[in-house]
Image 1: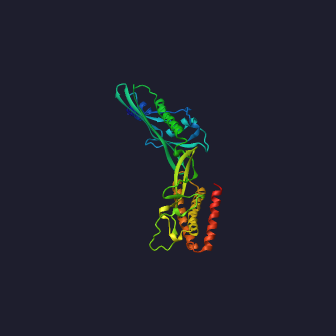
Image 2: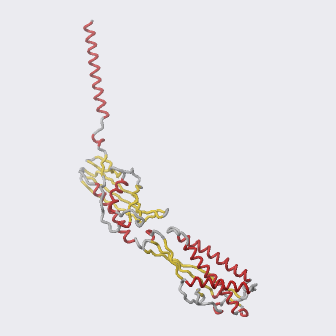
Length: 378
C-alpha cells in the first residue's frame, strides 16, 4: 500500500508539471505578435532642404496647417511584398514640412509677408494588380494664404498628382512625395514674383491720393475752379417754378471717382474730386439778374467746394483698413454730403436767401477767406 501510494503521488506531480509546461507554451504561441504585425507601417521623414527660390526673401513660413481628413502623420497605404502597409511620417506631417522648408525662406521681419501653408490633400494609395506589379497614385493639393488684419486671404493654390507602376520591391516614396511637395513651393515663389507689386491681395496697407477733376467745360456742367466765377449764362434752367418766391436758384453738388493701383507693397487709392454746377437746373428771374444775387449764388458754389475739402480732411485722419477702405470712404462721403446740405440750409436761413444784407456780407467774406486758404496750398 505504501508503494502504490508513493507511485500515485509521483505520477500526479509529474502530470502536473507536464500540463503546466504545455499551458505556458500555448500562451506564448497565442499572444506573441507576428512578424507581419510588428512591421505593418512604413515610416518616412523629410530632411531640411534649401530650395533655390528667387523671391524667398520677401516672405516667410508662419505656419504649416494640416487640413486633411487623415491623421496628422498618415500619408496613405502602400504595398510591401504583396501586403498593405500604412505609410506615415515620423512626426506630424505639418511639422515635418515646416522643418523641411523653413530654411528656404527669408527671416521674419515686418517687411516680409507671413505665409500660411494649408495642406488640403497629401495622400498615397497603392494596389497590387498582378504578381510583382503595383500601381500607385500620389495626390498633392496645397493652399497658400496670409492673414491681413483679421481676414485670411487665399493667394494661390497648387494641385498635382503622379501615377506610377512599380515592381513589388523597395520604392522611394519619400523622393516622389518630396518632388511634388517642393514643386508647390516653387509654384508659389513664381506666383509671388509676378504679383508682388501689382496684386492688391499682397498690399500691406492703403494710401490715399487726392486729385482735382480736370477743369473741362461741358455743355451742361461747370466744374469748380477758384479762377472762374459764375456768370448768368450758367443759369439756363427755366425760372418758372410754381409757388417759388425766390429770385434765383443754383444746383451745385459734389462727387468723387475712385481708382486703385499698387505702388510698392501698398495699395494706392486715388480719389478724383468733383464739385460742379448743373446749368439746366440752375435759374434766375430776369428782373433779379444782378451782381448782388449772383454773389449770393456764388457763395453757394463756394460752400460746396469747402465741404468737399472737409470730406478730404476727414479721410486723412481716418485709420483706413486695406480690407474695408472702400466702405469707409463711402460712409464718410455720405456724411459729408449730408453736412453740405445742412450748411447750405444754414446759409440761406441766416441770410434769408440774401435779403439780410449784413449777414450776407459776413458769409461772403468768411467763405472767400476759406476758399483762399484751401487753394493757397494747392
